[in-house]
Structures are given as C-alpha cells and as structure tokens.
Length: 305
Ligand code: AMP
Image 1: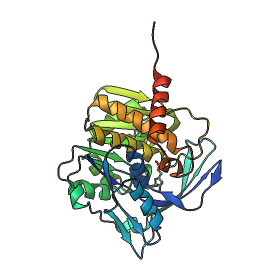
Image 2: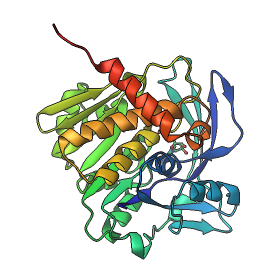
Image 3: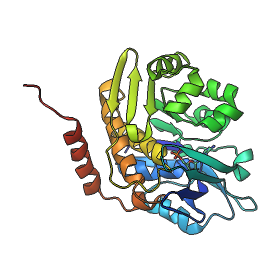
Image 4: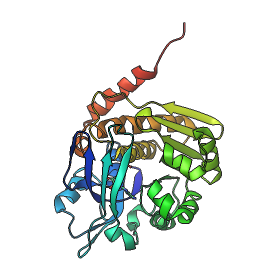
C-alpha cells in the first residue's frame, strides 16, 4: 500500500450555520483529510499535535479509520487548537470568530521514521513553517500537495511563499487564490501561482466546484448540487483528502489522472457538508462513494448529435 503523510490541524471547532450551532466538536484540517483519504487503500499517517484536553475517543475514531497516529503528539499540559466560525445565509461566506493556536504555536512536527519514505505528502492547513519542517524530513516524495488559507497569508506570507516554492500541487479557494496572486481572474491567478513553484493549481469554488490548472491546460469539475447543505466546514480539507488519497493509491500524477482526483475530491466533499462536523464522513460506505461518482458522471455527460 502507498504511504500518505498528512499534516494539518487536529482541532476543536464550534460552528454556527443557519441550521444550528455545535458545542466543541472534533475538527481540524488533518482530521478531515485523514478521514477522507481513508476511503482509498492507502496507508495514511497524521502528523500533528493536540493538548491533554483532547479525548481519547477522538484518537480512537482516527485509528478506527485505519489512520496511523504515531506522529500525533500529545502535549499533556497544553490545549488543543481551537477554531470557531459562523456561516452566513449564503454559506459560501463565513466569518472566523476565533483561532486559538494553543499547542500549535510551538509545534515541531516529527514524521515517524517508517513514513519518511512516503510517496505522497498532503500538507494540510497549518503554519507554513510546520509544513516546511515536514517536507525536510521526507526522503524522496513523488508528490507534495499543499493546502492553505488566508489566515497564513495574513500572518506568515513570506514563510508561505517559500513553502509553496517546494510543492507540486497547491489547493486553495478562489478568494485565497486572488489574495495570493493579486489577480482577480482565476485563470491569471493560477498562472501567477504556478510561477511561484507548483506545476498544478487547484482552485476550489465551494458550491461552484473546482478548477484544475497545469501549464496551459484547464479542467473544471462542478460540485454536486445538493438539496441540503448543513455545514460546509471541512469541505476543502475533505476535497484535499480525496484528491491526495486517490493520487497516492494510483501513483499516477499525470494531468489526466489529476482530473479524476479532482472528481473524487468533489465527491467526498459533497458528503462532508450534509451533516455537522465529521459526522457524515465517519459513516460513509464504499457504496455511497461509488453511487455519487455515478451521479457526477450523469451530471456532466452529454452527447452532441
Ligand atoms: P475548511 O472548511 O476546509 O476550510 O476547514 C475547516 C477546518 O480547518 C476546521 O475544522 C478548523 O479546525 C481548521 N482551521 C481553521 N482555521 C485554521 C487555520 N488557520 N489553520 C489550520 N486549520 C484551520
């Protein structure tokens, strides 16, 4: 089985959407990525940090999904990363209310020795220097994918740019692509971001799907139109987990295969938003994924007579 190293926050979130509000629940970029990637036959390992306040049952949930947690450091006297956000009626728009880095503030990631030869590295959202620290511990990765967000563009742009220079693929949302490139057009933004290093750029557009760019080529995957969207939190990370999990499983990093990875990312993200937090993702079957893949095909195929 291919190895996939996953970096990112493992967190507590509180979320408010027009449909309700949660208490502190399990969240974090690495959590969503790991659970999403576990839908593929890959050997995934999370490298992250939590505090002594993080319940054992959350760690068990990750283990039950077959995710290796040797690289999940527990700082006994520290507090877990905490994020809270509130969505508007248009759920493409959200306000971050709180970001408490807590144990993440002085985290030095350690990639377990047996995973240092992983083929694929998925650098989920957290401090770009932590992402860089992981790259430096890898022996000879075939593909490095990076996800990030505006928080790090605002607080650590120079570090972020030096990390971006070292990766093959970047996945970010449309507003972040505009902020990073200073360009409004997403086509021009993608070109500028490719000049920063990554050969592939994926721009996520929430309910409007995702775009993949490589050299002069472009591919678009819609998001599946859903009757009910309860909570978009983690959709971007779930996309990244499906994308990188599929690529790790197949070991084919061509543009053609990345198109399919984008579709898998979109399929998995479409489940994530159906319930609050990770609830839908932990109860996902292979059959669910397969059926939705068929729906995606139907949605986009047409014949010209
Ligand atoms: P997404 O909706 O895909 O952007 O991801 C939301 C998840 O990212 C939540 O579970 C948060 O815990 C986590 N998160 C929020 N802000 C940050 C940040 N600045 N760095 C890393 N993870 C974050």
